[in-house]
Length: 328
Image (cartoon, helix red, strand yellow):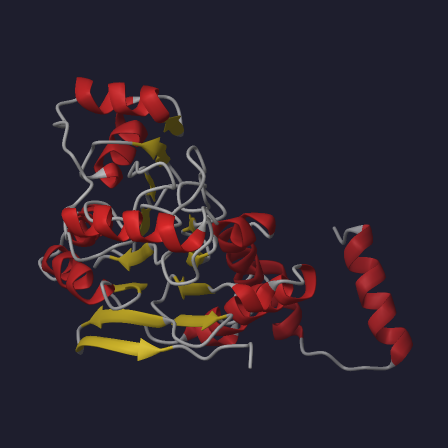
């Protein structure tokens, strides 16, 4: 039976005398774009920034042997989490303004099950604690001391994550920046989306957050729907950059819903960036970048400012791509 909404839609089209193909109307109802009918391109993994290249390599080792996408994204982001040279993720991450390295992460599987930790200290791999939250609790998010206690109870060792380089950078910043918490160059979260050989998409997002942030600050990275979102009916999206700006538009959820309505991944990412520009007058003062991917492995990306990079690894190998951007 035709619903009242469908009747009004059909009547309006007839009234203005515009012929719209039935196939397009069907796309709007199902969320299927023409591009989504293309040949499947998976397994595949995409992630943010140049530290996504080695992360993707680790993920691809899982995917290329028929492994599970959730294992792939977890193992993939372990790489930057443990790299002391990456100043925005895990070990080596720059501290908050009080000298504490606090970590945020979330993970989501192909069924929409998710786990998250925020404001976590002294644990090397917050993404694995987030997965433990997913698998071992009825909850989605644990924070602060509770997240730390949970991690220790499940065998994660206590580790000092403040490296010598990070500590020296923090001491220098105190003298030069007078405790302003936002630094344009130090919020390069890694977000990762992967589709395995069974066509299952999973995602992960992990960060040490804004350098020099106020103690206790949490950004978008551990928030499902902001820093990361996956729906296996449509696809997934992940974000990087100033978390507050992403939270304000529920960025990753917005992009997935735009793809559900028929937009391509790139179009959806660009639309999200344009919403930030329209809603946030200070947009020229920070960076935000988005990646999106359909269930067929079609990916796209877009950023607010110049400089955002996207790492991709599929059957054709590994590549690092420069993003188009909005602000001139």
